[in-house]
Length: 297
Image (cartoon, rainbow, N blue to C red):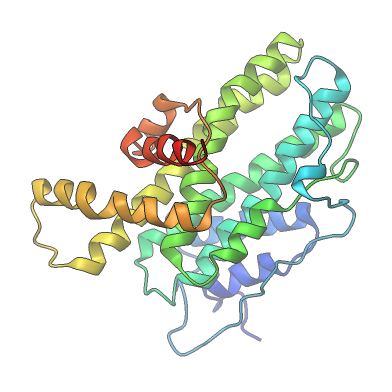
């Protein structure tokens, strides 16, 4: 067993993935992230070590899982019951986001020979998601409930399994499409909590969760572009050539992947301001919504 002093980031990521308790998972992830960001973990991975990444991270069984279609309606935050349901749903999403961030590091970092900046970006995402989960779970308790009190679904991990063999697909679906969907719905959710008189939850979502989620979507877009550009080389492309490549190759590739791995059209309304801040302009997503919707008519 490798000592923590010699541990690589991928080995540490696997320890996080193999931790079942979500609170411990978040704390361990925060510790690993801090060690990586401060240089206490030196290597992203060991070139000669081939480690097995679990098909599914360890999870406690205290959250009752149901199919997404059987999830009770969350309501519009007008009642305490509805506010608890929404915060519980958000906390559950963040608990999976922790695993998704460490999984992309462990599953694809070495396999795709990704640069150090890739690991750092997703370590920061993982640390944020752990903090979001911890804060939302604490807010649940302040509201008189707890994480695990209500049913939840694991749709996020279902799509992670579907993209477990291909980093481009994982980035497109989990870290661009799903992250951007969160940006679309959060402003409405924040408004509903304010209208329901729960400024504490609204502030948590508006000041902490929302701005950090923009950076998470940006990481997905950044590394999707990187892989596309790396695959075509040479690296001597001018900025104008890169823009032309993005328009003619990168974005069509994104559309192809999303149509393959994401069920149904992307649903408007889109938060164009937040998506643009993440480098995710309308040319990336509007054709998927409009074209796919037209096909179903």
